[in-house]
Image (cartoon, rainbow, N blue to C red; front, side, top):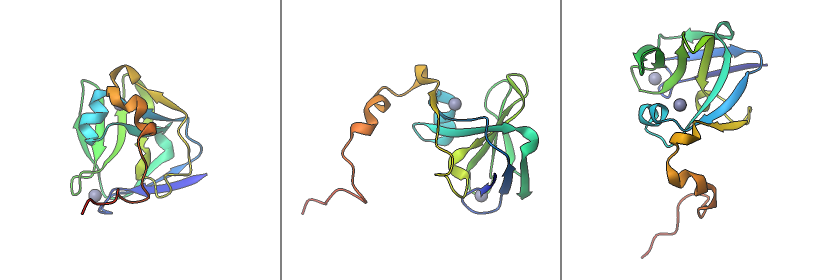
Length: 135
Ligand SMILES: [Zn+2]
Ligand SMILES: [Zn+2]
């Protein structure tokens, strides 16, 4: 299996070969603050499975050993690495793949830090686009 993906502006493109080790939805505070989103999906691969084919991500030290790789032009978060906790591993921010529906997530992780209301987010009313506007 081969996947491609990239950032919002297109400056950075990457290619991935093989199957992911896992796909998890992370609720930790670092992911939340870094992405500006209530949770972040991550597919995990051996580091050599991922090749950046265009551009160079900027690297930000988001914790002592955690490194977040993002596009400096548009801000999209792309990869996470941690040579101490996850040596030889790269996590890809899964919604940056060109076909984000291809690999379903398998677990919620770091739920200890989850925003309390996320527990029932799937019960909220759903609209194909937006709720009807009051007039
Ligand atoms: Zn970009
Ligand atoms: Zn996280």
